[in-house]
Image (cartoon, rainbow, N blue to C red; front, side, top):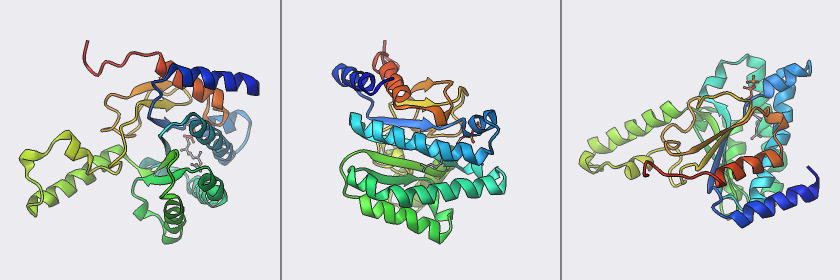
Length: 248
Ligand code: FPP
């Protein structure tokens, strides 16, 4: 699509209104993209970073409030060691390289997941980026790192049990709203739209509590090929759905 075509699409989306406030993405297909080109899987992740940049820019341009990217799952540690190190290296190098630009564009970077299990040096880079952008008021870019949905729920239950034991919480008062304050995503709205690339029909342990009423959009496009236009198409599809939340 030409630059003008994209600008028109953007106008159409903005005119329609009812933008999703929070979009979450399962970025899948880097490995397949590389394999089809006879390249190592790590080349797919490198190309995936370019897609991340395109989508962050497109989300910021539209005025989306929160973009959560499933960047590294707890299960991803089980990949070959060299692939895990390559993804980590890309993550830290990209964060260091892009932080000025993100900050300039008023993006607030946050993380969701057990980053305390990362090495101190890696944690520091992420913490610095968070600290540096904490007062920004534009797009919230939420990187899910070392994230697992069931672990998040278990961590919440452990904290709740501790608060009940210390009499800081009356179990009778526990509501969905209070429970959600114990999750890593405390303070963020639930995703309105979840996009998954490369055609797999799975949630893969991502935001299990938060996606109970989220609209799903699954595309066959492999993540490294995912363009601003593909992103806009997902949003347009969402805008033309009827959300009933169990009502008629
Ligand atoms: C899924 O493709 C991709 C990942 C598990 C890693 C995503 C990481 C990045 C794009 C790099 C760092 C990101 C940021 C935010 C700077 P896959 O390997 O599962 O693909 P496959 O299913 O085709 O094998």
